[in-house]
Amino acid sequence: MFHVKHIHKNIKVSRETLRIKCNYYIILTMKRYSKILKKILSYSFLAIFLFITITSVYENIQLSNKRNNLINNSILDTVHSSSSQKIYVGSQRSDDYLKNIHNPGAFCDILLTEYGSVGVPVLHDLVSFTVGGHAGIVGMHYQDKYINMTSTDTIETTFNNTDKVAYIIDNSSWNDIEMFPDYYIFRVYLSEEDAIKVFNDVISNLGDDYNISFLFNTKSSCYCSDIISKAFRKVNINLNYDFGVTTVLDLAASKYTNLVGYKKSSKNVSYYYFNL
Image (cartoon, rainbow, N blue to C red; front, top):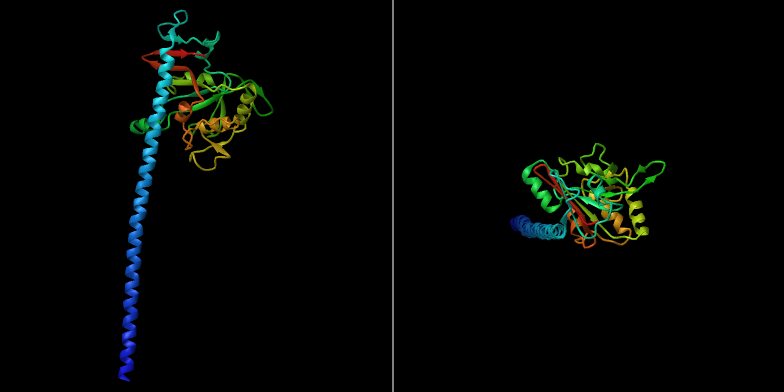
């Protein structure tokens, strides 16, 4: 009888020992996988950081090169310049280039600004360097039951807008120095047929909600540079070379966008550069 009790006692001890060992190995395995997961996350964040940094540097260099090329190949228009307004023109200017001073851009031109509108100084610089500012696309004379726009209107969307939806606005608003101390006019050379396709896709987004996530629900919502890049994809033009989130700087850096106008303001003087 004593022998049987002793055996049962040993079995109970063995089971308890086994349970402790199992728990120990489970904890050890969890710690091991936790370390692996931390490494994966660390390397992932590092990869994302490097990707954003490298692409941002490249995009800012591309924008700077396009801007310098326009400036270096422009000469002062002494006839139309004044003490508060300096106008420089390139060799490919059209006869009506002066209209761009009040209403920048032509049909399907992309207007964009380099600097974001974030109020916090350090964050403002970071957003401007990695993403850019704001973008819009110039429309045309068009009217239907719901839409009434002219060739001096742009289609835009911004989170700062009261309704936070894609809307139409007169592009003279881009001359508001408080909002846009600088702006660029980019042109993608299109056939008339393709330009209409781009425009039709843009206006189909009017009223869509602003996509604050930049990633999800992209079919029924959009953000400023997204509404433009999606429209150009309709004619097989990809303005987003890095295939990430389409930023304003992506549009500026694209091989398809040609810088034809640039305005900057400094000490109550506006400088305009046109080659359009």
